[in-house]
Image (cartoon, rainbow, N blue to C red; front, side):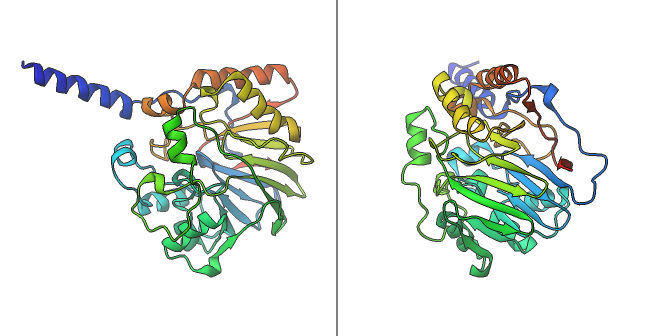
Length: 333
């Protein structure tokens, strides 16, 4: 066997290990919930697809966070261009039993939050809500202006009995300086974005935390493990859906500050981790952690799990749960 062939095989093995093999999710299996066997009339429910895609309903009004079902592979993300996967969107909506929605709200404009949202809006009649950057993703996909609504910081709006307050925050700060520059610098999408485009063309836009109140309860959706000091002062929530992707790759001080400025501010009784799963694994089947390449860029999975378990031990009255994929779970009876 020639040296060239040996080197090619070795490089192929390295690339396969980096891009095709997944880590375990950084959450405690003991936290897992099952779908609710019965849904009481008027209950607020949630369905979770993965990352930060969440469907909320009270039996009258249904709205979705992100609505992201496409899962471009590592090679597409690194070397190619991406676009919404129409078949995957159809499967995702069917798995969530969605035919109509009142709104879809990407918490920021990166591809893993906002790329599919315009197609979700077209198929369900939803209004696409978010920043001007998210609006330009909708315009580039041909979504009519009548289905686009740009929101303002702390300007609450009502969907049925849901009162939603978008609060400007910060995205998770990637430790890798090159990735941080490409993903977070120059954050605005200033013209209609027409895919296929590079994953990095889905710029950050404006990152929001969503505070939601309903007669049945209140909750906070933190879609990224970032924070803005003092942004949540004065807000309270019964439950926090807490984005923890990449949290373990940061310093102990960062993790403590993130906890203080999210959970510590709103004083919930329950934590539901989100955005901990792979961005490239199919949006069906069991949840997987990131591929090895993702883990190098924003990993620290064991640190994330240990941090959350320590917070559980430090706060014995605070429940930790993780949601099943697609199954409806009663959030508030």
